[in-house]
Length: 337
Image (tube, rainbow, N blue to C red; front, side, top):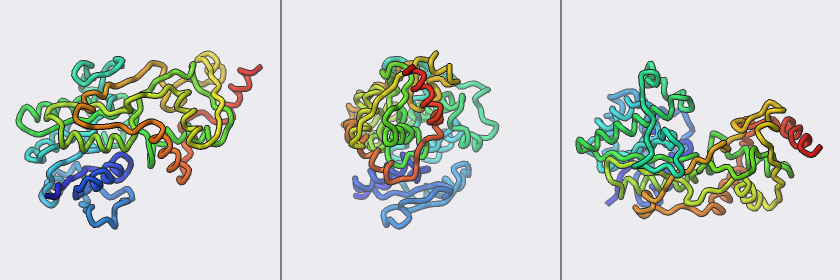
């Protein structure tokens, strides 16, 4: 029997890989979105497309009626109202999976655990004037609290009998990443012998390979428990220096990592936060709950090699995500004096 999946969103980054994963496991797929992004599956017989806005209640119901889905994966629930509408409209499906975020956690426990680490509180200051506004401010101070409240909506719906589940990825990387955060580091290693890194190179900002996020969404839909949340990230996180060396290996080159303290960066008006995917405190998420469902993560070397390979075929550089190279060289030269 063919299982049908409806994806709300689904044509850009995580969604694109999720479609590939679902097709590889025998699903038929319907995409529901506004059609503003290029659809890489436009010519695929097993992928249908329904155009509509998730803020249009009737359009979402029409997509449900047309697709008649067994499972629904929601990539663009950015405000509690989105989750409330979706858990109502899709109350009878076998699984409604909300793509949340590790940003929902209020503390950076080491590691953050789904059933122990508290979520952000959601207050009036986090409420968007219009739920549609939330779509354009996904990276903001209110992002974590909004995602946390979306999670709570799913938990409440599950208590009422809806098969609602939550998946919380950490920092996602991989092929076709339009944020270009990871591209910044690949570009640096590919084009320069020396690369500047804040701190001592041991920083841990837990990342999740995009193909693993895609498979996690399917596994949670198939095997997860309604009302539960599941973290997804690499099973072994790499410190910054080791990650850069692994990128260099994938590029068949060498890299010299140059470390700079906060004071040394500050002399050139830089801080750690000017560098993508580097944080001053460790951020790690436990993934044993997801692994217990049968999910397996791709090894770091393979994940990074695939990411580097696609980067080389793209026109992305990620340079806008970090310091200007001329400033970086000034810091490196000052450290050598």
